[in-house]
Image (cartoon, rainbow, N blue to C red; front, side):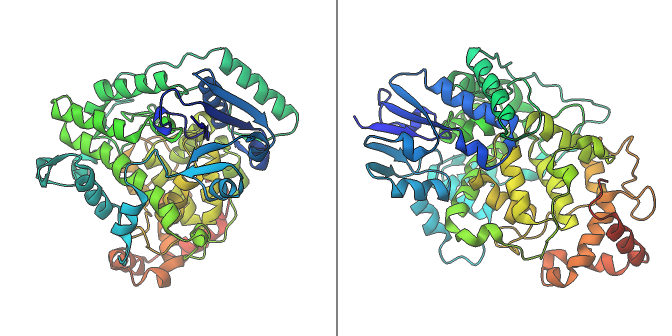
Length: 484
């Protein structure tokens, strides 16, 4: 049987044709020289590769480049980046197979997408539910509604420091993790740069660890996942989230099996429909959607900048200097990236991405920042997520409006505003919330570009009624790139 070359995000059994198929793994130090990745992300990838090398007929080659390592005929599943795909196409004796690790096939997505004026995740999600018979009762969606998001937007429980859910299974590091940490220490001494802080490994790197985390989530956390999936608590970064995105993106879990486990829990009465639907929408809907958009949109989509945002990422943000930030929400979330390489989707969108969009930072730089600093970040993940959704840099090709919000949203959905030196109700003055002021400054700066968007009509009318707009704009221009 021909040896299967597995990239570091293709480590699960669903990337093989047979459990006994021989495997080639390549560990390239050069990949870490090209850009500064989060230290814990580098650890996770190297540990996963080296643990996978212990299973079956596996050949792990450490080389400067992939081309140096592949010296025999191999097959490989379609890679997840254009650069890797183009490399594979240029290599002799390498047969590229269709992609795996996603649910909807590229041809099915293209058939669905071609001819549409706008591509919306909700439309694709309904198509995928029907196509794959997920959460369907015959021809109708389970429970009679396609989307139960309205049931999953509760603020955090009043007075709670954390949700009352069991912690996920503890990760036990082993000698491979020790070896990886020693190698990374040596690489740093040699001049290879990393971001973030080292720390105990927080995410699975083996199939067994990944399955244990999936089982624990479905049994103990999924029942509480839905209501507070959009909420934030300073003392509970995990909330009831699954933390499965890193292991799914490493290829250790097949999204099909994850979806099936969650639907089975709902069908057996062990999880409410709203939580099961909300979680499945993240995998079957959003994850597949951004994967397909990466290939469906033209390569230059990554440099889209419809709002003309040209600001550079300030040093305090680029280096994850959370201690330089006084705004409690941004400081805590940035510290989460620094210390864990992970925060859940609302801090990513409404704290980090929202702030960057308000300040007019370059969208491509933000996409690169997310790619490098998140343990589940890859180019295909972050392109549409950041360029299209978070920064609205594509002018609405994949989302209906900018995800811009002031301090009132953060105050409603978190406990951050309590004890913060800024007042979410204030937009001008020494206590002015940088998100509240930043929201109105964003609208003022982009009013001509947003005037044609019917969903922005009410906010823009509110902007024109502000009596202190000139003072607000002057204040925010003076703030510039300083840490808030």
